[in-house]
Length: 572
Image (cartoon, rainbow, N blue to C red):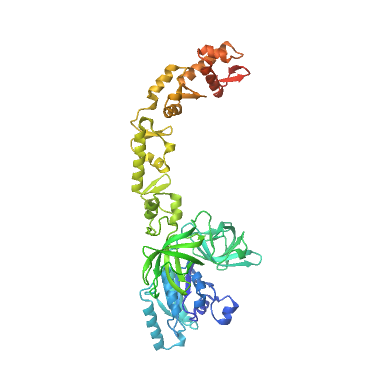
């Protein structure tokens, strides 16, 4: 399904046109029917050239502008309506500027009520429309003259809409579903139902979602689109979701349904802002501003980036602070209005949902390289969230162990690691004492080896050849005092198995072999077990050395203590 929004001045025939095309009156409220005036969003569906089309009929009256703004998020194109008997109006102009600022790229211009004017008046209206849409996305849009009482003109419009739909790019799949809620109500026998347009990815019955910004967890119980119940809904479709886990009064227009963990919520972002030419003043941080994103109306605080203000007709950059955390992504569009003056200021595009530089130094854009360069190192899964999409490895300069960085950062950290390793000489450096990023670059460094938890130059002398090794080997079962020995070397020798730590003493591995041989000989001579004294005498050492050795043999399974004697253990 592709979504088309109507737009135009009040009483120019938008709702009647939608009803003529679909057979559905988009005005749902009794007050709307009584007054002949669209107050809230209306929805209707039809099929043209085997393509499902959903129409969102938005209010045209200035008093209901916020509802209009809520309806134009997530649309594919517009049907821009101008009444032939009334022509271009201020509200027509505002709707056009809003659509233009939101980045809508395609549409059809429809002149309605053509049966109420003669050829001369119709020509004047056509000239006026062409003049006003010049230099906008509608400049080259087809213009269809329609009367809802003339089926031939409606057929022409259907054909034109079919061509428009065929020209649209495929629905974007970010693999991250999102629904901005535009209605919430209780359905008899079903519970809470919300409506909205699904973007990003598909949804299925049973899927679990989280409501933002309230963080309420809900589950999809039922799905309908165009009145048809579905097991699975593809992105780009209008839908009604029956959800469990929340009362309909606790979820409102402007809330967002997403999959937990797939979005990086933000309450501060950097964005571009295109100020409308019709604004007669500059835009600065002074003022009371309302932002319209998705279907949400939000009071925001803004600061300009790079200058103190943005002049009318110009595009600048702003930092926006939100009162709530919302799941936004780079590329999301918004409209900005100033409450005090009650006017639409312009529209913009979200560029950075988690700015880390001060606004005075920020240079926001949607480039992946900027995101990485400002942060130095970023984990790949975090980069996906920051970018609002899956980032391909070809888009980054360097990728190591799940992290991405720039070539300059990689060179700088590599230099740091090499300097540490060089300074450590033969001993090498304990890898655990290095930073995360220094450890990451180790496999990329030439002439560096990592063994037993230490990084050293490949040409460094092996610690096993250290003079200390011979000293302990020659000492046998009476090792030297290790208090004055370099503990770093001793630890490395223990890790290598050259030395063995026995309580407070360190023995060469050959001394352990000597102790095992002594225990085996004593067991042969004394099958019922031998004492520590017998073990000490057999080795010819004092109790200071014999006790740590026999305890080590107990711990490693060569001997086993039974009362005051040692008997053979499993390994003996």
